Length: 254
Length: 296
Image (cartoon, rainbow over all chains, first blue to last red):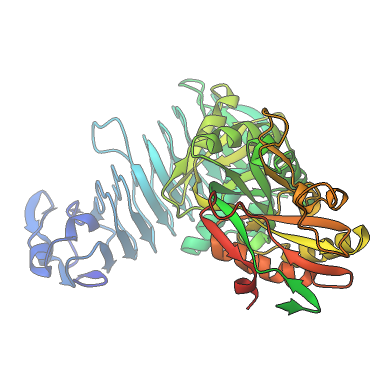
């Protein structure tokens, strides 16, 4: 058993590499050799993890990925526990249908991070994802529970169709954030373009936001400022095209 | 045994096993945290008449509280498991929920026995409430006219100790009160301990039952009433004209002992003739705090 299993990219993929087998809880009982033989899809062709990654360590739910992973997709799919540190950027579908554990991306992530599998009703149902760079479109789409934090810019449709959970966006956010959101919270510390189907409620200091941001600062070193903690937030309820029990909390920069 | 010339009786305080919860109340500033805590712990001196015992344990610095605001921790005790959540729901709902700027957190997060107090209070939100899971804990956001009241969903409950005590026997009432005040000052902010009575001091120590009234479950401790020295089996020594009691509840026996140690030492001052303790012969309560052993 190792403290951490390290997967170092040795062969950069020529095509999108669907690596939904890279899930920490799945590694809990596997040796390095077992992990290396797990299947991946490279350009539609079945391959093995070991063809692209050097695996160091075994039998742990703490996993670190190294290398340029921009073409690697589906990392942490359905993850239920453990810690996954991605020391770089990754492709689309990070942590889709995730149910627990923590993913920390030191770079950026592609579309549909924390979202749903194709055709599924729910995205992530638990756990925490922190992306320290930017994300593509549809981050947290159809999310049911959990926490998703993006420190950089987010693409279009962030939190689209959220059922519950929390998305915290530090950077600018593309259009359509929170569209068709039933419940759940989008906390926007940067500029956000709200759908017209959200209604302004009030400007206040939501106690849970301060609690959440302090937690992120303490646990993950997220660069939360005192202005974020003490600041006021505009509350927009919505999406009234749906259940209307969700919210966008827009930080009021003062 | 004597401390500063004050005799320490060879006796013990007899205390009971109770159920305890620790509530951390935060506010925009200490004023509002204290307002809520004082209301919450009001009329909670003794289970005899109040159904619960509660008090402020200590001030909690912003760096220690979950939301980074000033706070107070409160200990809340009842005699049985069932009544603790009942009392908490009623009292938190009427005092902390109503108090501007406050939020309410569990102070026993590692205790497995959980009381769904926040979950019960959420219905005040009339369906508009919402929950958030932060760091593995669920919180309820209850909309109120001011904004939102935030309360943790569950609170830990563990076995505690109620009824630790000592008696200050003094030559006159002023000296008894000065000694009691000194003891309370010394015991304030002792971790794991509260002093549930007014100012931490009891002037009306009681005995179990009544010699005359069948309906009374507790009546005056006539053995320590100086005015009854001549008409009852008095335990008031010569030269003693006033007796005050300090009652302590806590999370565990060692916490009570530590507080009694500093409290008794502080109470041994001018005019105090002896320190004693209340017990029932050791037959009722499982926790016995022997004064001389504690102070040795």
